[in-house]
Length: 542
Image: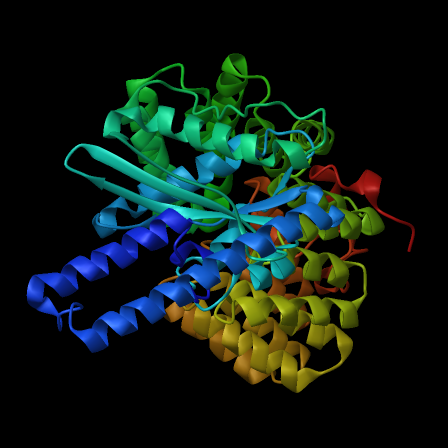
């Protein structure tokens, strides 16, 4: 009864009585000292009396707290923690994570209920050392859903518990055991039960039921979709390609599976940022899949977000903005749409709006390291370097091994005048992303900007010796040449990168306002690059 996490305690008086009976039976069987002995019987009577007193006190406190605390009657936010995969293999982790995501998706459809984002909720995966009160504070939620999933022998068992973060008391708990083929019914049952438990505390306009939309009735298609989402969430080139393969399988099983098309679209949209995939090929596939998804379900915010990133990669800013705004209108609490729209805004020199949008994304997903990166960089582009450092450092507390966060921290130090700290942070970025040529180019840039041209050139030489030429990664070499004062050489590389619509022109440094491009920003050749990217119309007077 004193377990730190409510899910680890007996959930009802009946559970506790059953546990006591089971202990008594074990004792009577001889595997422990017999409880029938006078001394042991006395201990059992004392223990039973204590248990009864505890149960009475708990019951009295539950009644008092529910009957007298008016603030407890307003539940507007919940976090779905990753369901624990028990009894299954490590390979089944995708299934328990997928179940968690689907439940969160179902609950997010309830008007007036905010569901904490996946990234922030998954920060607590496997963390038994954090109680629900602390989770509530860090995620700014009033209730937490947690539970377990066991899949074995063709059977599926799911337990769930909804706990108040204010007082740690259980608001609802239930277990379900079905055939593994009944996964959709189990999800719907859990969502309906939770809504029934929350209904008295929700806005009266909230519906009595919440129906998740898996988008398919084919269990195997759904399994492939869950496997794809699991890899997609991990990011990286190999994981994104693996995710696309699973989405392919899902669509092959169910050609009408709109959510699988949307997921594949956004995977294709991200691929050029994590690999050497052709931006034009990814653009075509992203648009085709997103439009196919929307033909089947015009309410899919993810499909519009995928269209947004596709238009950005093609430098079609107005179309991208329209897609992002549509996604946000459909799903106002979708952090990725806010983040990517915020990035579009700083790329089009609307800096205050960019900061506001990335702050909104971070508020929705406070423990997502990538959002600390997005907000930190938007502040760098706006020239607010001290604030950028504050945000980047907060991100590093959560993800100390994330290379891009060290990179953002380094640039904030550099532009704020701290050369030593800038070098140290960019060196850490390279250690954490040793295969990423762009990080090495950034390190060369930082060395050159802080007066060590020899080390900068040595890094470029090392890149070449590894078999990578300037043509293989034009942007990484270009930014280093700018710092070395070789502007003509840098501009030649940037022109060739623009001709092939290299995504690095946006992901390495924002062309209009990032200080990296300050030495060449007013050069006619750079102006022509901005014009080709359709960014010149956003350029602010200097």
